[in-house]
Image 1 (cartoon, rainbow, N blue to C red):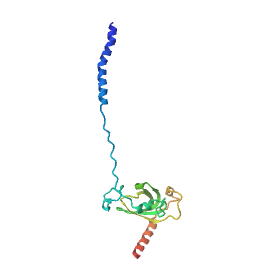
Image 2: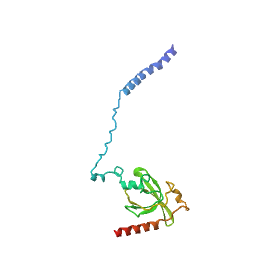
Image 3: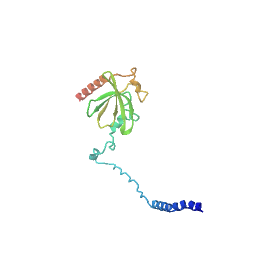
Image 4: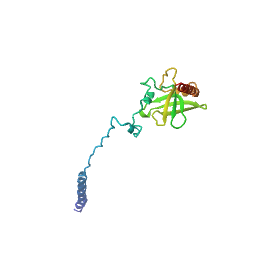
Length: 183
């Protein structure tokens, strides 16, 4: 008989604690969360006054069509193409000129790779086309023949390297200043 009571005793102890567990489950079920959807973003109006464009961040501003056409080599015939010699002027610092080896079309992040030789050392520079630091991009000389590749990384090899383009750029600037003086 003692063993029968010993077996019932653990069950009797468990029963009151199971009642607490059942109460806490119902208490947890009664808690509800209020669902609120995210507010929809307010679109910019179609026509903004001109004075507000300068206050908008660069990625929201409409991109200038001239620079867009300058790097959209798939659609525009007068755009920069791989193999062209390009001169880039910055708002601060010296201008950089070189052969365009590659163009990365990524919308606002569009960039192009220029290569030149400075003091007999090959220098390459990735330049963001829509960067606020870029003041102007000029095509100094077009490539004679259309290149069969979109990325001209083979021009890094000594066999294909154009070397310094300093003389070509100097002649271009001389002709440009002569034309401006004539007008």
